[in-house]
Length: 432
Image (cartoon, rainbow, N blue to C red):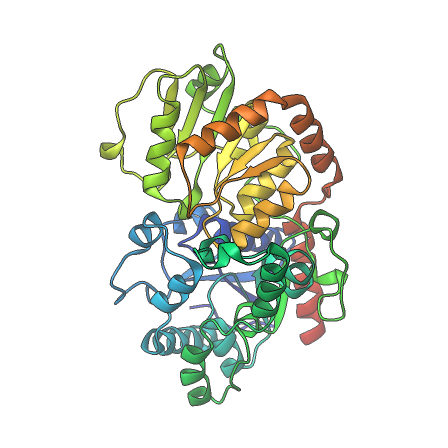
């Protein structure tokens, strides 16, 4: 365990079962350490713990948040479950207590002065028990200033009844719902008073915690700061690699050769929260066509599950999307914050199939700017995807022009730099 010193010690708790949630916290931790800060990391388990192997900081194992849950994280996401199912699955009261107890014990033993986390909702309780500031890394599309301006009815909620309601009315209803969303509140409020913590009013109180750090740029979101979310809380996009630079050396030779073949090139990346069935349907659609397609299968498939395909398809477990997207003509992906932001920096068109509500708004942010086509997960069909591919390549110059305009507007300073600076400002305020 870490010993207490005169220098403030910052704890970082990434959500390691989601690459998109883990990377921003990891990169801020790395930047904070490089700037001379003292840090320790914590983990509730997950497939992406390997991302911190080279980080110069101790990693303390807490309980695996999926222990005792009927499904493991890969199975859960591969089946295409929704956000409300995720919260209710991993946060029954007994698991909330178990995680809070582990966090309180570890935070006290290490003597951390602040905790920075992504989607680890129990930290909103444990940080108050220990009496330390909590910084929660959140998406700009999951805060009131965004959804009060831009939120649309949730695709995954559509049914026969909702389809006859006017879109404008549905959008007003969903904006009211999101501002007063009670997701998980009943579960957390069973536990919070046991630790002397006030009950929560809405899901936002749990998700955003005491002090949110918003991983988005105000101009990119097309919103204005508010009293609740002033400009200093927006640290900008944080994605894998440096999105404003191109590093072809990070791209495998077989990927380069495949992309450079005759015909249009496409990269398909469904991240850690994609749906296996949809992924395989996309493989079937492109198999044997004139498109040269790279499929990054991540944790959606094992090597033994990879189907036999024609030579126009190349399977890779991971690709450097920040670099490959600059080399290909089109990306097809889900709507994860980091993935969509990486594509925005690439200046290339995309087709996205959002998995969660946050994904939907990440994608719609790009749709409004004329760079992206959205396909609903609930009604996904390969016919619709094929139509979207034809539409983009049929008007490719216009989509490309729009995508490059978006890329030119994004900030040059990477979000982890601004985030580390914000952490330093706050830790100095609490420990001058």
